[in-house]
Length: 140
Image 1 (cartoon, rainbow, N blue to C red):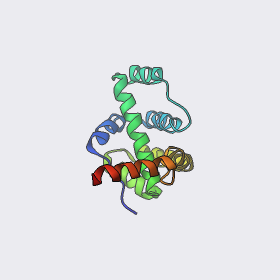
Image 2: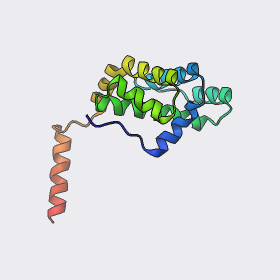
Image 3: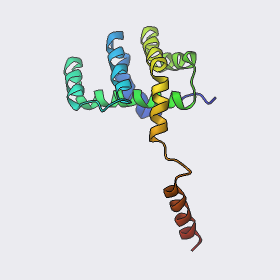
């Protein structure tokens, strides 16, 4: 298993959460897991931003960074202890890291199902046709 790493820009987006109380981190995790079931309405970001005194784009970026983290962990089958260690190394408190770990374990199956529905099927006829056209264009 490869360890999960986050690009620096996503780490920066998560930094908004590192200064928040555990209930706020829990709410952000709820929004991130909601993403896999339905779209999160923009007014939710605005409301959260007003409460936190930040821009709505910062809230949305933090939620998207959490979504990326959950997806990446599911892709490489990260263990809860690995995610907890990663969370604390990023700067989350022990309690916030536990909230992230709980969100991951509570949504792992849902995230994996989401990934299956979003994946490009390598055996699809469209992929095969695209592959053949690309090969032909490269050879000529």
